[in-house]
Amino acid sequence: MTPALITLDWGTSSLRAYLMAADGTVLDRRASGQGIMALGGATFPGVLAAVAGGWAHAHGPLPVLLSGMVGSRQGWVEARYAPCPAGLADLAAALVDVPDAPPGFGRVAVVPGVLKDEEAAPDVIRGEEVEVLGALSRLRLSDGLFVLPGTHSKWVRVREGAIATFSTYMTGEVFAALKGHTILGRMMGDGGFSPDGFRRGVEAAAGLTGGAGALLGRLFSIRALGLTGRLAEADSADFLSGLLIGAELMDATRGHEPFTLVANPALTERYEVAATRLGLPQARAPDGCGPAGQFAVAQAAGFI
Amino acid sequence: MTPALITLDWGTSSLRAYLMAADGTVLDRRASGQGIMALGGATFPGVLAAVAGGWAHAHGPLPVLLSGMVGSRQGWVEARYAPCPAGLADLAAALVDVPDAPPGFGRVAVVPGVLKDEEAAPDVIRGEEVEVLGALSRLRLSDGLFVLPGTHSKWVRVREGAIATFSTYMTGEVFAALKGHTILGRMMGDGGFSPDGFRRGVEAAAGLTGGAGALLGRLFSIRALGLTGRLAEADSADFLSGLLIGAELMDATRGHEPFTLVANPALTERYEVAATRLGLPQARAPDGCGPAGQFAVAQAAGFI
Image 1 (tube, each protein chain N blue to C red):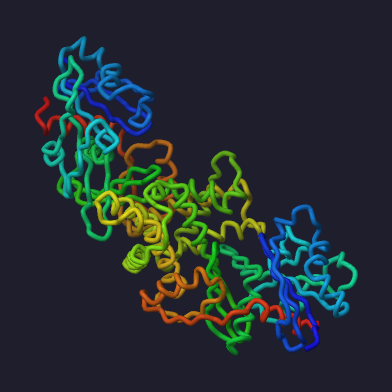
Image 2 (image 1 turned 90 degrees about the vertical axis):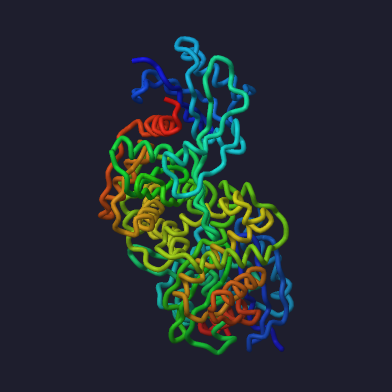
């Protein structure tokens, strides 16, 4: 098949590049550690040329679509936020061209993030919106609740093919801060995954009543469980992980809604185990939602 | 008045010592930075002799009551936990004498902590139980909900003069970990207290619906408020403080119960401001609850 498009998912610490045919088939791929905060003295055009210049040289001046943190204020060019609801046409209409595309490429443009513009509790997303739109494409869905687990888990609600609203849960980063920088971490080993500790943490989350503050009131029980000989040191880190992920799942699904897991194989299993324990129906999106979403945006923007 | 008792509130990083008359009047007091984790090469008997030896020399072999972390596993002698419900008589019956009291003193004994022995969510307290019993004594109360704000806030429910149950909220330590070790801290200055930021955080807590996980889902809005120009950097640390303290207050009081603040003047004002904003009735205990509680335990134990 003839190459027709280059896409880059360009994040903070790494990037992935794809060469695609006009029907979205991925023909070739590259990866690099040159994320936008890890350029190592190189320039944005320089990194694009180094990663994808061979493709351009071989196949002519292909258009390039960039998504992820490359569109943030610290990125190549700032592509601000499209407001919710945001579908393919909205993202395509808000693409921002880089001012200094390297020679040999066609149009080089960046996908905007998405803004939930609520006065009291706004939220932003950048990169994950493309993956969710890719999941819609791959699953042939136009509605649903999707989660991208991570340092910041993104829960995205889709209606009629557009991102209707979303919420960021800082679960992974809160876990790391609590484990690394509070008294809870003192009793936590660095051993392997403890399924039993994780399961008990999820069950603790399921048993939480009361409001948001209940989490602040439950954390210390991890230490007290240890002091009273009811929780082994080797289990306590994953107890905390289960407690936080369980609380996230219960809140984000309101305790009953089905959802689809997108990307992040390392964390997907934890979310599946926790959701099953909590009786929450869930499905896993196929691999490749990222490039599928980039292709869909590029197509909506007339790149192909 | 004739001195009849020496008490020490001996914590992790400091200690306070009191010389008391037989009616509980505080006749003299000392403070030292030699907390149990800051002995600086000295021994426990040596520190007691250095701090209170002058009193013993002047007034004869007075009995000594110690409370706080000095009774933990890392302290002078381990005085384990009295189970809930725990009143004065229970603590008095569970005192543990030190094996090596320095010469010139009478009986030297340590107050135990208190254990909430719930299988799934146990909790422990050590030192604060004495302050709460002191607050009961000073306020002539035998029932109520008391909070000792701190790195770990302790919410203590008293019934018929005894500690019926309690809950630890890791609010202060969670605040420090989130400010110091997550992306939220990047936009936080180290300026003075921002009443406006704090008030907005408390209001955000009041608006939280959903379960415990709602807190994980609300934290990132602090960053998004900053990104969208709705929250100044100078306000954001106290916004987080207000969010966490507000969530703690709403959960611990179930949104309506009156409570009494004990000790910690620095934090008391924040809790008062937040409680007022949330419509929660509250009172402030008088100073001196610590020594008043130690006196009450000593009296119950027949020291005087």
